[in-house]
Length: 100
Image (cartoon, rainbow, N blue to C red; front, side):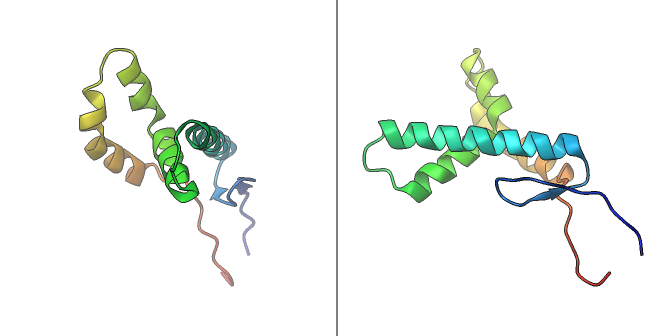
């Protein structure tokens, strides 16, 4: 039986195979929570679920959003394809399997 070190994110319980990825995921979730709170304070009538989804989507795409704010707004329209490809390839969440 092998022992495997994993790091668990406090916010959502996701497990990672290295500390750096776990901390990055935790920071992304913190950003998403803060964006969600901002939306709920300033946008009347938005549901809690919708504001959480928006906050998470913006936090996951923070790099492209930063580029758009710095003068490349067209990046927001073209990033979905590259985001989906890179997100699928760099998924570092470690699945936990019972009885292995």
